[in-house]
Amino acid sequence: MDKTDAILCQLLLANSRLPYRELADKLNLSVTAVHKRIQSLVEAGVIRKFTAKISLGALNAVHIVIFGTSKLASLQGLDAKLAWHGSIYWLALGGGNIVYIGAYLKGISELESLVNYVKDAAGIPEPTVGVTSFTPVYILSQKDSGTVLYNLDYEIIRSLKDASRKSTAQIAEELRVSAKTVRRRLSRLIAQGLIELSIEWYPDASNDIITIFHIHLKPEADKNEVNTYFRKYSPNMFFCWGFSNIPNFLLAFVWTSTMKELQSIRRTLEQEETVQSITSNVLFAGHIFETWRDNILEK
Image (cartoon, rainbow, N blue to C red; front, side, top):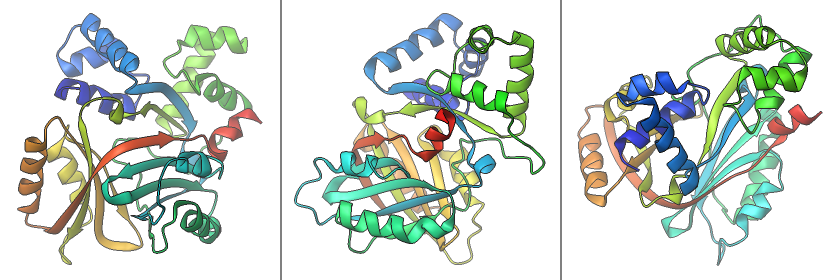
């Protein structure tokens, strides 16, 4: 990937239904060039799916990130064990047997059983557990407290589940309703933050370097610094999480094409006034799993 591909992936992570013309305008490219880039990313396996899900806000779900050093002799087969759980949606493996796991919980009461499962399955006796205080920066919309999902809304999201760039005409034909109805319903879902339109993104399929930065902020730092960092270091910083239960700590996912670029970004970030220290782990593999959140659409 080059920086244009990185920006393109960020735009699709935020909204995988963005029209080619809008993507082209944002990237200062032709529509044909954008189409070719997306096709290349799909063929390389960097983009596996264009997805649609019910938003975390609509489900009142809790987003958890667990990470730590695994004591397992081999991490081979760990993805199969975690995929079975039903709440774990993401696994990333880093150097030194560092394991990162993301999960969606229906409620905080499920946290203890999840942590116990991860300790045993991933061999992490002392995991760090973070409850995200906000969704990743690339998810732009938020739920309106007065909104409701209706049967047709579920059917539209189900239709887009693994093909979110499907046209409104295709959805309408599939659901046997008018294209106008689909457009109106879909616009409402997007405007009220009830749907998450994104991609399954596998940057490890390319030759690029994906690194997780553990950023420790100074005690007086404002948590809103995450937005400043994201804007300043984009497109290299893909997204960043903060945690309600871990003060002054951020996890940032950074893309670079060379180790030299990675070193430069780390040095610059370390010099930020609000940063106390940084540790970094280069990732070498990632996995995405379906969860109860996806299965809701099948009921």
